[in-house]
Amino acid sequence: MILETRTTVRFYLNGDLVELDALEPDRTLLDFLRLDRVLRGTKEGCAEGDCGACTVIVGRMDGGVVRYLPANACIMLVSMLDGAHVVTVEHLKGADGGLHPVQQAMVDYHGSQCGFCTPGFVMSLYGLWLANPSPSVPEIEKALQGNLCRCTGYAPIVRAAQAVSNYGSVLEDVLNRERDAIIANLTALRDGRRVVVEGTRGKTIIPANVDDLAAVLEGLPEATLVAGATDVGLWVTKFMREIAPVVIVGHLMGEVSVEDGRIVFGAGVSYARVFETIATHIPQMVELFDRIGGVQVRAMGTIGGNIANGSPIGDTPPPLIALGAEVTLRKGDRRRVVRLEEFFIAYGKQDREKGEFVESVSVPLPGADELFGVHKVTKRREEDITATLGAFRIKVADGVVAGAVIAFGGMAATPKRARAVEAALIGKPWTLETVEAALDKFEEDFQPLTDWRASADYRMLAAKNLLKRVYFETIEGPSHIVRHEVA
Image 1 (cartoon, rainbow, N blue to C red):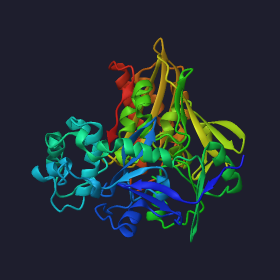
Image 2: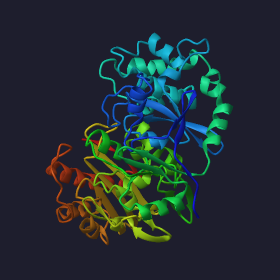
Image 3: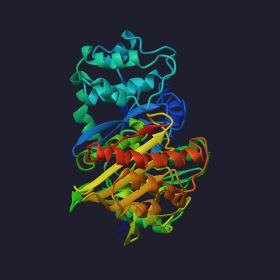
Image 4: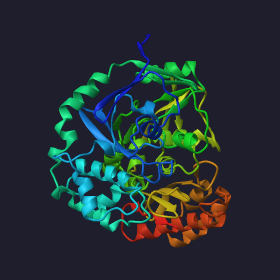
């Protein structure tokens, strides 16, 4: 079937409709705001999605309503916004036209010194206030994971966040007052067409649906797929790579279902969208998800993207491997299923043909008789890249290890199972002596590298200690393991 094609990217920016019929494939939202629209309240800090100075909120239709989430404008491509509503700090105002309640609270509670990071904090707190007008301190701290301030300190900002609702009602906010009009506007933008926009350095394609994506990639197998841009965005801002032609896929494959003892994730589902499902069915992974970047990154990044880029330090592959996950790969009308542990072949190489893409991920739920846990080791607790990450699924029957699947990231060129360690445990009593006897097997499984995150010796020692921690936690009573360590 030949779909109609539209040649403009369309979205709402604050209160205005934006239609772009010419767009560079690597144009970031931050550059568009600051250079093209002279909206300079959105700041450029790290240009890699870490500091939060560029935070905006982005609204998208979700089941008949508009759901707003924070995003890093520095790594988000403009083409990703087709059909969305972008809100910047310039759009905020109080009911009387003055400062917005979030802004007034920041003033009154001395939440700003140099002020460079302040607009980003305001936007993160604004998104939190819209969703939760009376947040707890832990909820505020979680909302601010992706915002860095090096002069004010967080205590006055947290106090401001607690006080916001004393300054005005969420119901009086501009986005709530105009919600019906926003829904109508965004609904009108959804025309079901493929979008193709040209730039001087190449084209951007936004497929209409998954079948259209498959058709596009058959004709452009070398295209760069962009879901959340949490990785590709850095190719643009840090490595200055040419990425054209670009195919935007973050609006596709966003389904999640739970059936027959497994969760099936569409490859385009974001960490934020899947969080409640994870919390309900695999609660052992909740703390891990809370430490993948900041809130902005979790709103943008996708499960499929974390797998497809093949990083040896991706946070989701080790626990998904330990659970026995499978990925469905699609090329044209053909699909094939691959065990996730076999998907990663070598550094930068996966079992994926040109023009083939990850369509979904199927994850078996841990059994009631299995111990499952995930441990992430980093230099700092919040929003840090992994030094090593271990995932453990162990079945103990009558005091004996009946099964063990152990997977690590950061210990090899790919996410990898510790098969020698597993073999040393299976069939043995689940005792400290058995665990300690298995530790020497780590050298058979892994030869980690030394880099700026950790030395090879540290990684090896940490991995061994994580297995010992698993043992101690199981004999101390928990039926599951939830610990995340800071180096």
